[in-house]
Length: 362
Image 1 (spheres, rainbow, N blue to C red):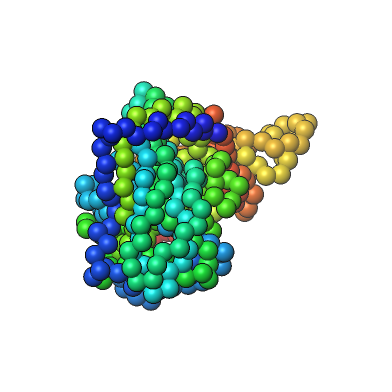
Image 2 (cartoon, rainbow, N blue to C red):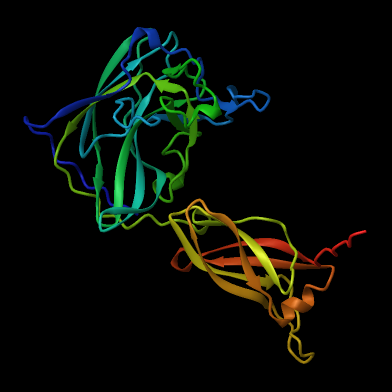
């Protein structure tokens, strides 16, 4: 668990920064949706344009992740440093939902203050009481939300301002940018990207523990702006982000076909570097080569591996004598176990099948 330390009050010399949308009337909310629906790519559309589908959830949280390939664009919910969010302004449509302003946290593993792993998002920090924006107007609300954006020895902390609402209570302050609201636009320069969770952050017990991953959307601009006042703060000392094994490496495939006394296991590395060992075990107790050996779960082959981020490749294992014997059978149920050390293990059930006979020419 992270221990959140209070940010010291802002002084008269503190710097104030305004971030978020311009709240231009020409970009008034036009995405007539509340938390009962969410965007989903239309597979029948060549650009994967979003269409609204039922969320099936009682609430939601949205925030602006930024403008792709434009890190200096102010349209971001991510705060620029340690300090306090002092007020939030919202441009609403005709039927605005009551809103809560929430602080959501992104954490990144670090080594001596330098990022050394993928970012983990998101963790619920705090939120305000509900407020009611006025219809078809800009409403400004005074808040007092301490936030962090800093580098500690073991973790990099980045807070983001978000909005939460309850399903069926009114529309969200979101402008759908023409030409951008499709899944194919998410990583195109200039696209305004957003993230959302269903239900709202803070409503699930794990939101303050292991966290929760949001859904990402292209082309949705939250009509929200906020004032941030910088202030000296104490860096949260919490432990490094603890990733689960499936956040590091996943196992692919369903069938293993040995060739020449070896087989390939497909692994997908999700972090900067993935290191560990992979072991092929029988799922049922078997005897070793000697008939007097007891029945037990046995290893058919094991090896260490090291992969780089984004790598998806086959790791080749040499089968032992028992593995080569079972590989001659038509089918054997096996379990792949990937041991990632302190991060734990991840497993997948597969089937070991006899190699296909090669057809001769002629």
